[in-house]
Length: 231
Image (tube, rainbow, N blue to C red; front, side, top):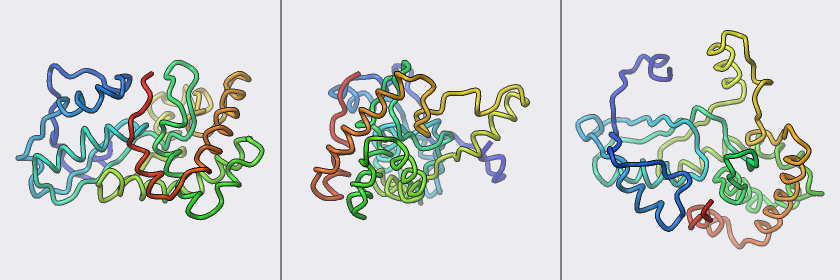
């Protein structure tokens, strides 16, 4: 995949411990402790190297920061760390079983902070519809990646694009499935059911208005890594 395209060797910078489980749904009071025990760093492949980490997605951002980047920095001496996500930025909640909320999403929190700094957060709230929010989410996607890199301590962060995801799906399924065959609500706010659309609009209005009352950009970004409500 990514390494083949760049003609680079793939080396295991991290090794997952046998006792480690999934931390995505772990209550916040236990998540940080468990994350610290999840991976070990292979220094012989990291020290003095430009490390490119490839993850399937970035949701809260705490895994990227606490499990990966900070641990590598504590336990080894890389020349630089870069993060790549094979999934586009996640901007919207999922009511269909994954059950993460906009108030948890690092991409949403960063966009709200950018909006406050640039004084267009009122435009995001608008009448509670998704159009303005998603317009700005895509407009500032590069700025969101840059801010995320700063937050997690990486030199750079890049997410997959919708166009790239579409191409990957068509290649994988040999044209039998396309992007239109999948739910993309968490990426573009296009919900396949009326109930999902209703819940999304209600949550969008609520969380944006709450963000509008926030203090400074830095305080909003600091809260991005505060305890997340348990699922």
